[in-house]
Length: 431
Image (cartoon, rainbow, N blue to C red; front, side):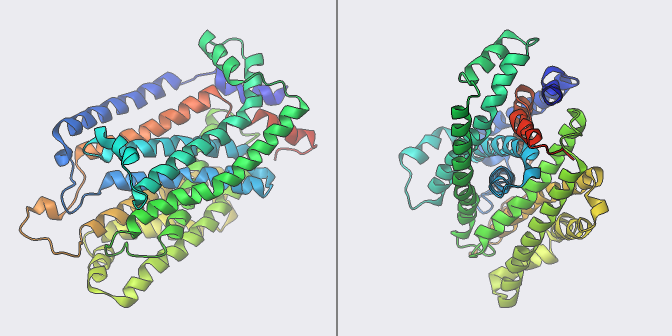
């Protein structure tokens, strides 16, 4: 069948895969060497000090958690709304969600001075601590995301077990175990549909909780610019922007490198471009809310942070992020010509880069403006800048997420075979 041939082809051909894996492993080796130095010598090798105790690592953690929310948005919300165009994209969104939320957990470990004490958070954790809530919802989200990714794979794994013959023995054994003796009978299909629907409903509150609780880690701290009640929806709306952007990037990569132009069409890019506009407008509203209210009150400590952002040391980064990461993309993507695959992918790349630096701006400026004055300390305690080790480890965490995505994409189809079959069985045509 042509569908099976098209969607199984990427699993059999590995053009450039070895070079890509070697590149990722090279980055990881540098990152782990940097982390070894940090583990050996302590957090003093980073730019973090007594006042700025959160830096690039925590900004990266917030970014990874944000990106992971796209699994809920596309494979759950859009699926429950029965939007047919979202089905070829849903598995891609779940791959991204699972890879980035798993990497987010590692980022927290890299940020700890004593990772050997991580178990104490679970053993001696207090319910009053937002950190305990964060660990709980992240673990739950990983579990549900895994199930939401794996269960729809069952019929496809049975197809892989049957049709892929020219593969290593370990891969055949893997497919045999993971197929769980799938027979594709009516009872199994009915049970699968019910399970997927239940998980799609369950993941919505968990996904909203994961980024809302992350925002509470900031909002529950009495710091200027963080002492806000809008941080929950503000973080969630920003997550949808970053998540939509990275899905578009992944779609473009799989469309061209996996030869899936008949399944990831211009229509899908157009729809994702519209979704990016919608989420950007929502995020723009919360951005205005975030700065307008403290600007109107102009309390002394808030004023210092706002000055640093609008006209001080962070002004260039701040305005670049707001203009090129939010305002200009929103205006451009209103026009249909800008929602074509190539230009949309370029715009999404800019949005994603700006989304990363936006998380940096959420963390660092506030940390540099505590309520108590900074005095009688060295200059490097007052001003934070990430060191080479922090940058290397941060790039390494991105490489881990990309490595996980690569493994998922090369072992299993990135577009559901059985759902695509159902789509054709309804006499509908992939546009």
